Length: 485
Image 1 (cartoon, rainbow, N blue to C red):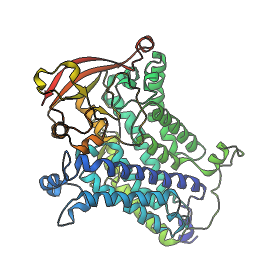
Image 2 (image 1 turned 180 degrees about the vertical axis):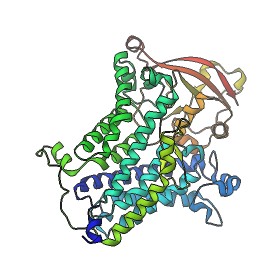
Image 3 (image 1 turned 90 degrees about the horizontal axis):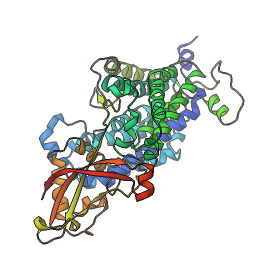
Image 4 (image 1 turned 60 degrees about the vertical axis):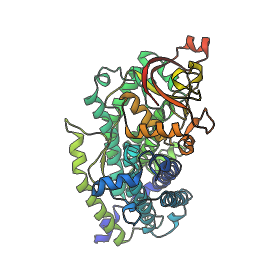
């Protein structure tokens, strides 16, 4: 058999639907990521942001990651940032519509390579506001899925296999960090608190929290079963791999319904499709039970394409050594990157669980003398996603990422003089219009308050009886005042 024939065995003709879901799904997430950056980045990190990028680049020097903002005489401008976001959204939207898929095989490498490069440039200067595992996850996906090719070639089995390896790192890594990190995952009590204390609850989180204890035990057991056991089955032949991927997708959909984790769950669902074959999908929608024997016949991909895929796969295998070692290390890292390009990363979430929910509440007053202002003269600034008003039901924002709200959750766990938070208070005190656009309610309609104060509360969900009696969503107890301007 000729080399071209041997290489033809690496074509995945039975994964054409999966390729469509993966490429269009990752492109849709890029649209969201660039869109949220367009709206939030200038306020948080722009020229007049809370943590300005020009200052960061001047301090960090070569320690900052790869970024196009370093290649200009003026390293950063909000105008350039917005232009990159618009270009990224355009490329992502075209891919969702299926336009570049009609071109030569290399077209998808160029399109996804451009989105990956621009988002890497943004991530490298995003500092604390871009320090989330799903940012690295999007970058890794963005690099990989371009090598699935266009309709001119069959989906490469090696790239699909590497996406399954990514899914394994996501799920098994999360499962192991839980077992190693917190006893509540081992004694099955983690979900007694999680729905109430998670960073940004959704509209169904309270209902999930109020479920009986036996239900919460089943949640933990189900999580362990899928993340530590079932996910390994995606490496087996069909139909076992498809069934295992379906189980992962079901657990991720439950997380979508009960929380707000930006695009983490949706991107995991998209990656899981790398293990789902076309025959299985057709059976799921009512077709006959498929045969899972020989691959679906089709024209072999050109030799140059096969050799390119082999070279990329070899590179990814080399980069996989550190993440593989991390998975089985007693000092396992969570959401870590082992190279500056975020190509093969370590993932994980909730290695330690919080049992009490704390919230930082920022209030302002227009009283002439804030030091003697009456209590009713202090009114809160309401954020879009994080809890504030006890009467307000939590909303669904994911897969959109509210970066400021997420940082407020971390701040409540370790109150202190974070640079970005001090800058936020100063901007609110000055009546800065940019910061106020990121809020849900500006109680002063654009005017500057005469005083600002910061209070710390403990929040818990109302019981069913408390909800009936008061109509409130939350009960809160003040723990003290943190700052006053």
